[in-house]
Image 1 (cartoon, rainbow, N blue to C red):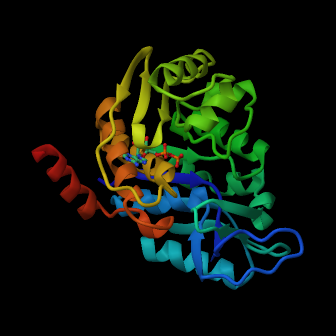
Image 2 (image 1 turned 60 degrees about the horizontal axis):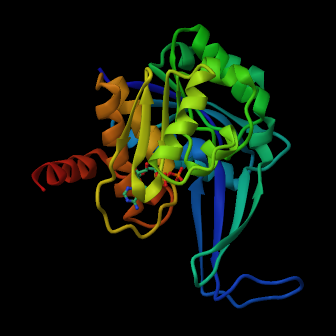
Image 3 (image 1 turned 90 degrees about the horizontal axis):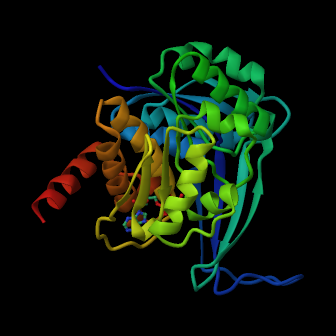
Length: 309
Ligand code: ADP
């Protein structure tokens, strides 16, 4: 039986401009290249879970525009159900304008557009998807109260709720109560707890503060340094796998989306988190967001290699 996952989250179309440097006020810089890519943390996590073979429903909003068409086609191509994606009649699809300079540093303008209109009624309309899922995945790119409403609803239905608290912000206490698992990166863990997270020890302190507020499992992702797992009071560092990283965009989404699938397949937390770390590492070896999300076959091949080495 496939794992069933519901994702309450964002759709964002990324417009990526590569330039020798980022323009200053009033300046036009001649760029080196342009790409458009389908993204949004919610959409990325949905695609990741589908790549690993899960049955995935996406719950969110796109505009009634060509970018909305592309997002929906993109979900269909990945095998994600879009029955609960609403076409907003007034606002366009979420968009991000990203200028990346020669050093790889970027400046971003993010316009939430239709993502900002996702409402409680949208979540209620998606009740069948939430009722039939094993796990609900939520991030923080939709209106705050809607995220809260979704996790409360799933919690009441007895579902596992994984909250990726990204982009970073302070959360009301009830988020910790309804989310069984949280997966902050260093920055997000620091903002949630006030602890400066720079290594496994500080990650352990931050994870403890989050767990004390009610979360059963906290995984602080540490990029090239792996992750720190605190599960049912027991903490341990999860070492990274060695890869040749070229672009860590969406590594966190790869981690969280795959974690949901591995847990749904019945793996114990530690092994599920270890495998999710491998998926995150694999994602970092390729450029872009969704194009860098590995398939099941790519993951299995890499897993076999890491066993041998
Ligand atoms: P985010 O994108 O949210 O900042 P991270 O960069 O922490 O997330 O990546 C998520 C996970 O992916 C990490 O915990 C780690 O397991 C894996 N990962 C990411 N980058 C690398 C890397 N350069 N080398 C090995 N593993 C990585």
